[in-house]
Image (cartoon, rainbow, N blue to C red; front, top):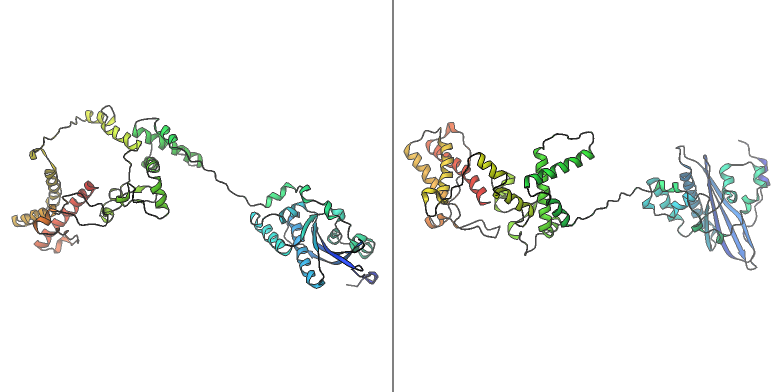
Length: 472
């Protein structure tokens, strides 16, 4: 590559005026599809009001191979200009009063003056660096015909360069006449803004739910209505897998029932639910204080306490709390009690009659007879295929008597951590009767005593589940 001899014709002049009192830096950036360009000028003012502008330095860089939009290229050129000015300033060692940065891209100018976190990654990273490097600079807009960096981005030969006064002297720009608020950037600058998802929620008043629930007084019909509403919503969301069956599934009915329970909870125990969600306990004045309540995975309030360790199904030992004043519960009670409803019709069709037990008549029933009946039920099913002697049978009956004497005589304490309760065993032996062991041992290697003990354990396990459900 040969050196152009006309380069020697380029002259270098002194850049400052005599008695200079004010110095400004003006930087220009421009871009083409192949080159990013930046030019820096120094402008001096003396005491008599004269001004002089001289070329200080320029730099160009090949555009990236990856195809970028013109606004992104303009932003890259602005970054090149910011880095160039940052590098020139320490070398000058002159007191600079103001630094002006010029670009003819209104889109890039809008990005530079925006907050970086609102922009997409490519633009955000470059804008953040530009704002850091040019925090003391003033960014302005310049037209293409007054932008000397345009010559650098398009390229020219030495003859054209020598004849171009704007390249060496820069255009005479009056900074006061270029107000940014008079410029309206191209709407396409919004393409680089991050898409912010806004979710608006409206809290419905309890009156809305009351009106919705008052559509019908039939509890089962209310559940069916909500089940079909939820099915309609799911069908809209998933059009390809629409459920057009005539009948409801068990899962749909369960979802509607849980939804009604949630509404009852929010209307009655909103403060308690908020406290539990924050990991705090319910207040001392709350109705749920003695229930050791908690929120399950579906955000339903359930009863905690002693039965949490019982060998029972989850729904049986940790039941859902339903407020006594809930309209949904009242509908269910009406469903059971109303003679004109479905249950009464079913009783009549099956010839089911109510018979009331006279007081103080053990032959008609009573709590004692009910306990004996429940044990006889499990005793029969445990020993139906067993061959035992009379003494062994008597041993089993006596141990069953001990099990019955281990039941509570008074209501359980309000303190959830207090497990001991008054039982008949306290009056008989002075302490509660221990629970029989529940170790499973194979039948083929049991002695007669072990076999008898196993029968008692089996009866205890069966009766315990029924009794715990009754207490709950």
